[in-house]
Length: 265
Ligand code: DGL
Image 1 (cartoon, rainbow, N blue to C red):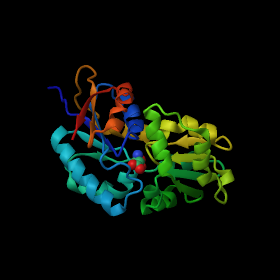
Image 2: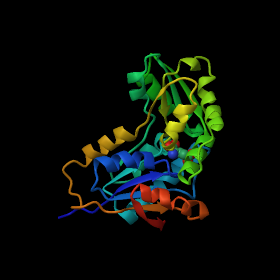
Image 3: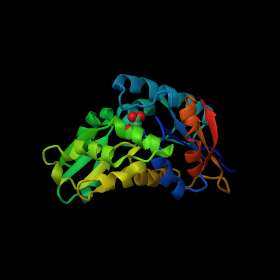
Image 4: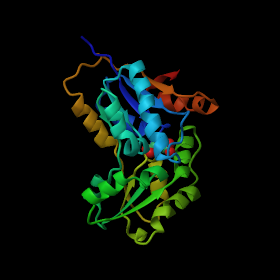
């Protein structure tokens, strides 16, 4: 019998599309539900307590409504703060998105890595732990930017990033002591790969960017190996926790990611 249960992707906004896209490429018949917590956006300026309370409760309601076979928390902020709480609360396999410090350390030659995330993500002990475990011989510089989340979100509405603003965001990393030696930047917020080309163009010298998207796609494929899928690709759906003129402006971008149906929670 065909298993129509979807894979559910969850983010505060549109950033999780950078995780959905590589997964959809690897599993083209997987039914996809993309959830943006537009009522709670942005997460990066919220407290740990707010995120730890909000995300498991919301995912509980979503799991009940969409009966997913697997949930991807396609948000570094939510994952670094609430991943254990969600796993404890739900009886569904959960894949989180955490800063790709390990792959960055594997390719850095200068041994100076930049981690660009939200303010909430870059202050997490989870990030200290990843840096200590996988990049012990590197200098790991961090910078949190709420502005870059907004720029990425607006880019999906068709507003092109302004190079001067991108340079200002990157200065938060490159202007730190040792920053001139950064050769790899971890996009530790799922919004940032959406504007990676513009970030690369604004960097003071060539750097490589890494993010968790491709690794998560491989992990999802591994965890669902042997499962049944619909015989042909099915249109995905997008779910907002609150609709507004702003979310409506995102509908064409969602369609480009194969998300045709729009729903509210
Ligand atoms: N996309 C999210 C992340 O990966 C957070 C953006 C926000 O809501 O501040 O951290």
